[in-house]
Length: 270
Ligand SMILES: Cc1cc2nc3c(=O)[nH]c(=O)nc-3n(C[C@H](O)[C@H](O)[C@H](O)COP(=O)(O)OP(=O)(O)OC[C@H]3O[C@@H](n4cnc5c(N)ncnc54)[C@H](O)[C@@H]3O)c2cc1C
Image 1 (spheres, protein in one colour):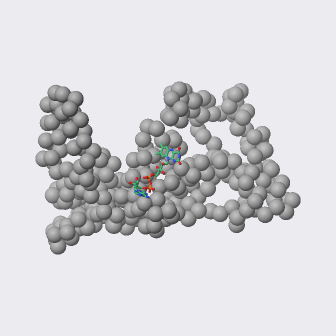
Image 2: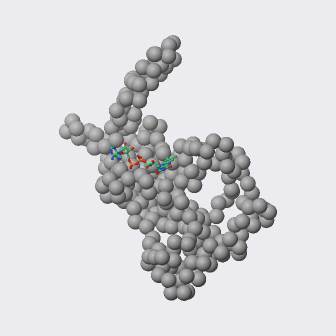
Image 3: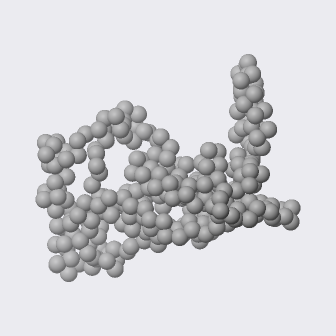
């Protein structure tokens, strides 16, 4: 039995920032006149501007006007009006739906259970079923790997925050409170030992798995559009999100930014 870490591998990517631009420009029966060159993935500035417009719903001029309005705001009514204007500005996500990313994610069950909730824009395109295929413990009955956190975070005073990372408990085995509770020879062994015991007794893996803990590592292939992953990352990088899910989101974001630098920045900023 091992103590495993969260790992995200980019398996494949389809498209570039230019595909986002051309998906938008087809509305006018046009395409970008920029062609890839030694500058790598760098776009023409007008194409980069278009991407920023799609993601925010605002041109540079619109944005400057909003900021000017914010500085000049004098009454709560004016502030409310500005707030509504920003909230109600429509963005244009569909050009970001033609460019895709495919990952393999290794993470504990409790993280998979959270991330599974995002559906719309994952590769199946079907609400209710994301582009997600996962190891099945109906068919696999090898010794489970358990995720072990590097640190144990303390309980937050505000329940909605989940945990308080300023209150970090030491996670090493020697710690008298926490270490003992996670020592693989004690609790870890106990949790997986019962599973092994059931298998040895002839119980089917699909039932024996029910005694395995939420810290058990699982793996899945996760495919979706850039629009999809940007939404997932924004949700899971929020300050109220679970830190371990945020770790997956951060790794996805780092990969996505390398493949789609302009689009990713524009989507994450808006
Ligand atoms: C910090 C945090 C805490 C959470 N806590 C909980 C919790 O306690 N319990 C829980 O069950 N979940 C919880 N969730 C999950 C959350 O409720 C969402 O299911 C999850 O974040 C996926 O969100 P989504 O709306 O982007 O996903 P998707 O289902 O992929 O939807 C994407 C978007 O499509 C639109 N959409 C989707 N379906 C419809 C529809 N039927 N009709 C109209 N528009 C639709 C909406 O605009 C939606 O935002 C939490 C999420 C976060 C980030």
